[in-house]
Length: 312
Ligand code: RIB
Image (cartoon, rainbow, N blue to C red; front, side, top):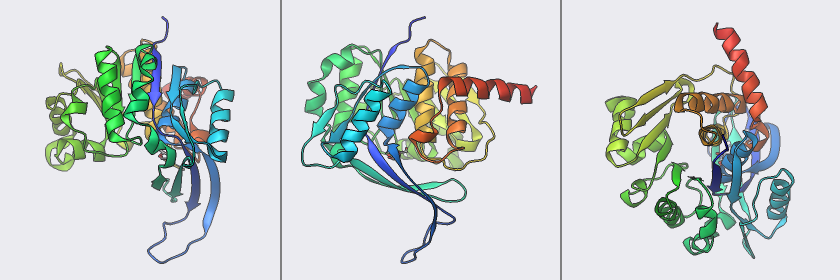
């Protein structure tokens, strides 16, 4: 079966990552254990993940005409990720992210959006044919909210499948929700949008609330507790997480999204796609950095075969 065309629209950053035994308190200086500079940004990570995991991907982003921007464009072109419709802005730096990773692999991130903020609704309206020529549109929340709203509307009117990963967490409104086919959220994001607490109404209660708001399918990721997909027809699939030692959880969610979209767009069913995405995400957390830790399709297939051996 031919793969559906995936269009990812979103941010690009250069990540400056420091691994440290513990996160410093206010006014404190601590020594880092490792430093890494790598490409990142939720949009770029998801586009790269979907591309490496076998999807037919185009990526629209916004970069400054600076060293980081030029390097980023050159790299994506080299690895065969189509970024030809991206916006290049003058006099505004490309996005950067400062990432602290502690010994448990947990991160804290500050993003400086720079050029990502310039990806406007007007620009996307001028790229309508890219949406029309795609089958699936995948978005996150590191570009302006109004742009996300415009893209969701354009894609929905054009009959495309709209997948929104609401990261970083944002209280999206009904104008966006009504145009979403698949909402991918973690616990924090789900609670913010639904206004309900998981420890009070349970994961299913929060998912039901999101479905009642008008989303067609919800994927709730629960970290070590796996993920749940539930759709408006009340079909529910629960997939456990793979047990791995986390070195750095940065881009775990992005890898999950990219893997899920790649596998669904090859025509695989939800159960298989969720399992594939979880495996890709599990591999991702075993290495440092966002993009350096995103596995290939072959690596995920090996990992899945191996984990089957241990389960039997
Ligand atoms: O999701 C991880 C990403 O968040 C990092 O690559 C960083 O750039 C921030 O956007």
